[in-house]
Amino acid sequence: MTEDKNGEPVLVVRENNLTNREFIDELNDTLRMYNLREEYLRKPFSYQEAATQLGVSRRTLQRWRNTGKVPYIMVGKRPRFTGADIEQIREMIADGLLYEEQRQPR
Image 1 (cartoon, helix red, strand yellow):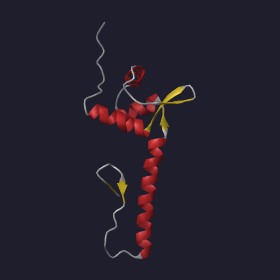
Image 2: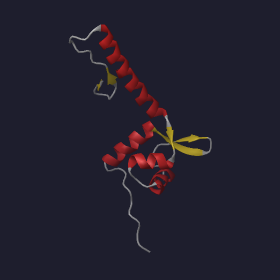
Image 3: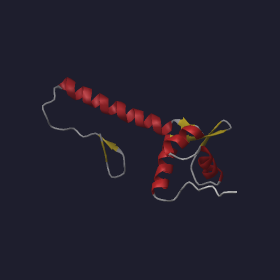
Image 4: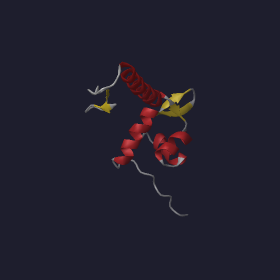
């Protein structure tokens, strides 16, 4: 599967000598990958899970949330980060908009 200029998944059908069964199997695999990605984007992750995926400390992620720098959702009384939030935060880190501050020695 490829993506269009907006990042949306696009199914590309190649003209080759696939049998109908092979084509259907390939299509099912593509749809399965798409569904897994959609599931990931909606799934809520804890601070620790999100921090691990982002390569930052749990405390840094808490600090970013408390200062309103990152998106999050509330699940009951607990803040959570969806896969989509994590992707957005990852882009912000890559663009230099977020960084892990170094602790000052006491």
